[in-house]
Length: 271
Image 1 (cartoon, one colour):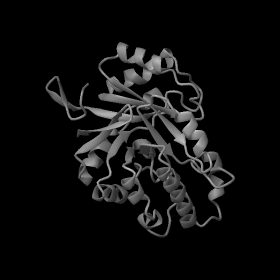
Image 2 (cartoon, one colour):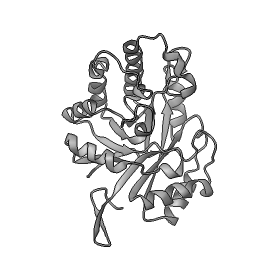
Image 3 (cartoon, rainbow, N blue to C red):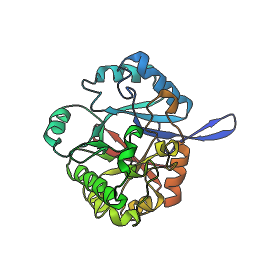
């Protein structure tokens, strides 16, 4: 295995090797788990200097993952380490259903993400639902979001928490500091030995920022919460997108290691 701390010298240049732990090969259901659909993601990872790629399709599209296919893909592309995960759309009340689906599945890790709020299951990060922000107290919406994330973190179902401040996706900002609206969420993440991802997808959303914000990452560092890197790619072209920016941000905060996973076991590697 090539470690994320290793360097590759090409034509006199030193290239930093990266990991991308949040990749959706199936997108939102427009593709399938086939060699033809998976290969472009792996090839792009190699081109971008990503040496460890984690396929994490949404649980609502990835109903029957073919783990043998990933082994076949690994054999064909030994230059990149392939991990198999899942992003679960955490909705309060789904815990037994989620646990049942995950039971005895050989995922390397599971990512918990919150995309729905309330009994109406408002998908707050979809552009077609953005009008539902109108008239709402944005501080209250942030509180509800972080309470749901806290529920996910406390569930014992996940190893990585995704796009921790996703609520900022459209640029709606609370009046109070985000850290104060999070309550004890980060302490729970620490207590549960979870990982927070540095997700570059926000750079390409209306907010134009990496998830999570710098002050959240600084608090993660203070609490010694591990981080990992991800593009949240839903197209093969986006694999590895701006991961060097994510790595630089991690180092700026003080992190010198990132978290990777193999069969549920966290492995910290130098950056």
